Amino acid sequence: MSQQVRVRFAPSPTGPLHIGGVRTALFNYLFAKKNNGVFFLRIEDTDQNRYVPGAEEYILEALKWLGISPDETMGVNEKFGPYRQSERKDLYQQYAKDLINSGNAYYAFDTAEALDAIRKEEEEQGKTFIYNHHNREKLDTSLIISKEETAQRIANGEHYVIRFKTPVNETLHLHDIIRGDIKFETNLLDDKVLFKSDGMPTYHLANIVDDHLMETSHVIRGEEWLPSMPLHVLLYRAFGWDAPIFAHLPLIMKPIGNGKLSKRDGDKLGFPVFPLDWKTEEGISSGYREKGFFPEAVLNFLALLGWNDGTEKELYSLEELVNSFDLNRVHKAGAKFDPEKNKWFNHQYLMKQKHSDLAKAFAPILAEKNIQVTDDSLIRIVSLIKERAHFVSEFWEMSDFFFEAPTNYEEKATKNWKSDTPALMQELISVLGEITDFTSTNIETIVKDWMTKNEIAMGKIMQPFRLSLVGALKGPHLFDIVEIIGKQETIKRIEKAITTL
Image (cartoon, rainbow, N blue to C red; front, side, top):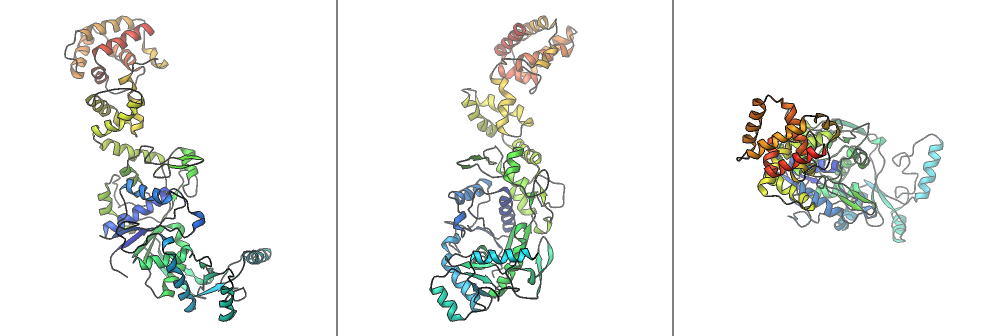
């Protein structure tokens, strides 16, 4: 095996890429880059019954959006191509036959009906049926019929599978970077199907053959594959190949309750579990991109689900993640998904964006409402509201009063509108009308001087003033709002409030 670090992300194109799969891709990417290695993408599409059109393109687009595109894949640096298993199927039959010839596998002709009958019979006796050394020489296999009869039955077109012949009475002592030393008893393992008579391998055979031929140095995958580890190591041994180094990542758990994070959790609690929108006849499953998340925020959040560098640091650029990443610091226990923390990360990255970039992202929302505003004004508005936002999509609700006068007034805020308020507001209009340098700082100085000189309490002016302009007691610094909407609009809104309230 090559000494170079080569790791792969090998999803099946059976639907949208789950956020757990994205984290697996990310950890593979970080490990490869940290070790000056190669991160490649292989599409495992041997199960054509579960193939979903568009899923492969979705996977590639998601990785591209996140900024973790593979170094090798279909059409990109195809050093060990093809990178679709369905295009490699001619390879696998010979490897399956090699295992037969070396005595590590056998043909099994059992029908599904026959196996069901045996399974029911075992259950009635309180036993669990496992197809392995206990019964493989009593079932319909090439272990108990001659080579000639086996060949004849295959030639007759009889359906068969090739099963792995699991060794007996052996304790496997295996090592996983994350889990440490693990023991497996071979007598408890079943003889997995490796190849079917339709010419397609199962996941287990194709995975091992491809990882060997593509010179995979480390297999970094989800915890759900841990039970397959002994079989995979035994397959490497049966072929006479060196096994890669394994690392099984912890599951991403539900925010509430127990179990693995699912699409249902996202639907129920209103957060995405896919990187991009996924459209079907039933509707759209929302994605992080379309929900307004920054790709850097998604990566940062996912990196800390099950890993940390031993410090209190939470915000990392992709480059910093690469430099800090270490598989030895990945936790064994499942990582709970926290939707609020997810949004917190997005807020942190929103705060890092240039005001001009945020203004550009906000502009289409205003265009849909037929609102025209200068670039400078929009940049200024964005700078005033962004601290309270998690997403650009929240900007309109936080800033609508900059563009449109309020049509109604928040009921609890109108309690600040007293019997003497109209007269005071009328005086304020006169003060504002006299100001020539209509900038926030100057307006604030003049208005506050007027209040001090006339011994008017701050609350008597400031709250009704804000209510007149905004329609509620919310928004950024009041005099910044006044400067941006301008003298004429400010006076017009105060006059309307006097008439309405």
